[in-house]
Image 1 (tube, one colour):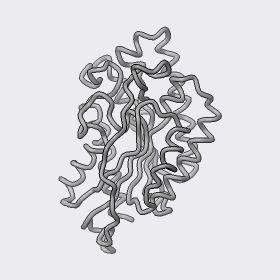
Image 2: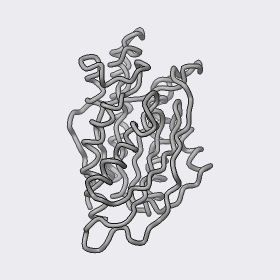
Image 3: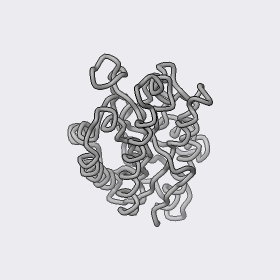
Image 4: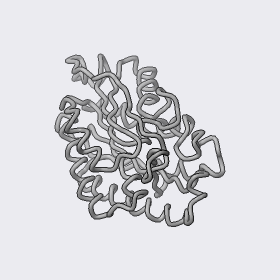
Length: 253
């Protein structure tokens, strides 16, 4: 299956760190999720969905859903939507924490050592690299490492991996309170461009959701109560784009 590049708008996005930390404005917390188990009934030969599938979401605060409920982030909303549409099970594990940069996620994956039996893997990382003034060149190197790891965890199948673009926090009350919101957007674009180029050159699917978060000033309901992160409504719009890709991946592979 050739990797699919989803262009609903050539824009890009992000997530932030802990409120108490000097290098990140949002509280630090881990996601909690059941460890998935492999199910031999997954991926039947006839292409029909049946049984239980393993889904691993890798990222930072945008993945755990800082400032929204535990089932309101996009991985858990994807699980609910997928199970409702297909009448199958999507066992979901999240490895993410508010404030993580690429190197933090690399170390966390090594520590948790998830099984290389994932039917679907998503990767959304980089906002904290940008926010903390990290090097774009280092991001490229570490993002490429993470993408390779994601493929390994997805049974070595690049068609089971989806990279999600970084949200743009410039279009939030927090972003508007900074000295230069336009610079934030420019830098987010640069990080997203790098991620997309690495992803597409690796024949992996890249899904753009940055444009959704750039509506945050026009539609305040897209921003969580902390004035920084995406809301449940915003994550639901992420899932509207991600769900058909996930269904197609699991039907095909």
